[in-house]
Length: 206
Image 1 (cartoon, rainbow, N blue to C red):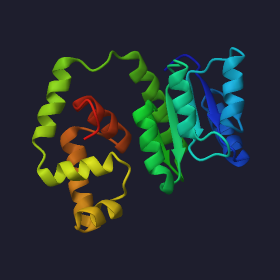
Image 2: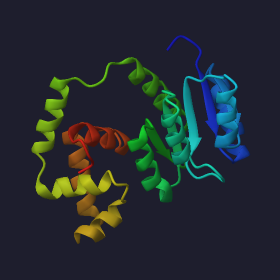
Image 3: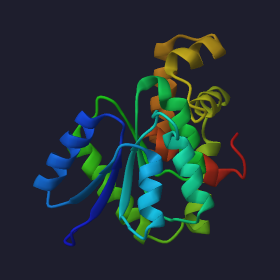
């Protein structure tokens, strides 16, 4: 991407803000940092605009999930990438269903985050999935076994392999194998993409 992009980073951890500000500056990317979602929304209300938003999930006051809901309600179509701790994955999955683009678990690699930002901006420029592609996804989904569909359903609900194994009374390793096959068969690179695909395939989550 040749044009300089402007990213909003929202996190109540000052060390995270400083680290990302320095990293993005070295990548010729403009960054505005906010200590809370409310501060960010105030900037939006004053007329500031951003190409992409990176937000922590769990913050005092308004959470990352609440922020995504607020942006959707306000009709602001800007890609949101969430930074989440392991225990917040279910919240991050819920945010994907409300329109967030992706989530990255801590500790995260800064280069991976930047790649995710560029991917989000590229996807934004592409047209919505067409009927032919949707049919392909449905066909792939139909090839999954009943057990694989169960694993997919629980994965897109935000459950970990251990939690899925407990629910289905199978080992976490077996869940991992099923989950890997589901991701490969469906063509999803990560759980966020799997959630979006699941939403496309059916009108409501499994």
